[in-house]
Amino acid sequence: MPGLGPNVGILKTVVVSKVAPSSTTEHAEVIYPSVYDLFVFDTYIPIVSLYRLDNTLLSAFSAFIHNVKDSLSKLQSLYYPLAGKWVVAEDLYIRKLLCNDEGAVFVEATVDDEMDKYFDFVHDFNPPNELFGEFAIPGFCAEDAHKMPLNKEWPNLIIQVTGFKCGGVALVVTYNHMLMDGFAFDRCLKAWSEIAATGHTSMKPNFDRSSLPTLFDKAQMFGLSPDMKNVDDVLANAFRTHTTARSFRSSPYRSVSKCYQIHPDAVERLRRKAKEGQASESLELPERFTNFECISTQMWRCFSRLPVVHEHMTGSEKVYFSFPAEARKRTCKPPLTEDFVGNMVLIVSPPVLTGAELREKSFAFAACKVHESILDLNADSAEDRWTDTTHARLQKKQSENPEGCPTALQSGLTSWIRFTNFYALDFGFGIPLRVTPCFFYTIPEFTMGYLMTPRPQSGVVADMFLRLSPRMSELILKDPEFLDLVS
Image 1 (cartoon, rainbow, N blue to C red):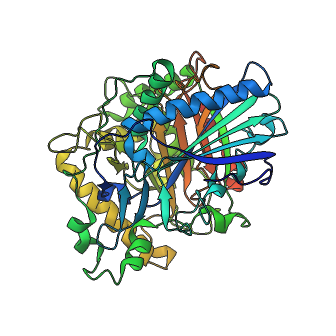
Image 2: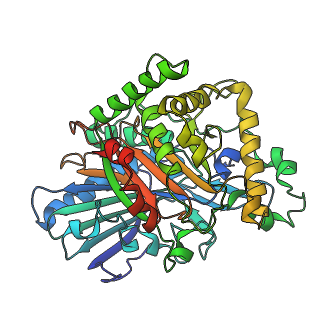
């Protein structure tokens, strides 16, 4: 792929190429998605890693680029689907992954400015699109799953490495979510970090989806006709369920993303709070609530106190709170191994309550409901959960009356705090200063938080990024319980 010339927006120089696998192996030529893959239909997840080189010389940046490319090419020999691309399938699979060893899209760029100018974690984390490599693919938009590239091909991996005049480097790894969930991506990062350090890895990825249902199996549930004539309607109703960022960029409902840190003493205060509620309400508590259960319970309660300021909210003020749960071992028969590279996530949610109902209950009550919803996830309940999620999507999309929607405020928390490899990528200049996903404004109407593993030795339990409307972002900072969590 040729370079794009000297200037693209804020970029001073740009070189676009593809990094192919260092060696080719015998592998499947095509991978068909499971229904779990299609639930993140055409979605991309950019992961931003910020580095600081030991000097500002061009030779240091060139060495960084070389090490990234060399290890990436070796990684793709093992994780061969990363070198492929998704295309339209003219059958009930909808999409198929061509494993053709073409290679990941790779962008080298420089900016004649300071790195900190473009990564504001305090006020609004919204880096410019020029840092994400999407311009390298005509018609492609990483934020908008509705928009099809001009060539109707979706690469599995887009990488951009941008050097700044201060010696800072932004590595943005944008992967197609249909290939794998966060759990699998974390293990992919482990393989990459091992290869970067030693040239080898202990990982043995498995891409076999044969035990999981496909859209062929579930066509009747989604109302998909065998002749595919209503495929666009099915995609719109079942898989493209949210308005994406592009239509909101000029809208008053544009979201704001901010970073907060959660310290151990804040979590311990929540555990003590749960114990106090146990005595007064005769609740059956687990021996110890996990960090995630404590934080998610508090955020559920904080979201419930946000007033009705969203255009789609109704007077009922119901709050639907959910979070994805990795389900390889707990829900599959036979269980999938940890090496499975794909999507195996189910949406878990405590009972839907109005804000007033939840506020009347204690923290201990809410924490028990979160705990119970997690325990209830098993092989017997998995099919029901998946079916309920599917029906809820269809009903919500088909109802044009907000009062007919099952809930007024959708909110959630995605947790990556147990993923330990985000800070492991060292290309000879030390581990990243900061790592974060950057997909917060993809679904602006969904009030959302992301828990990330903190930098090693930071003394922090989790970094939390909140994606809220500007008004809600202001209001939550007036909530004493939220401030106690992030103080």
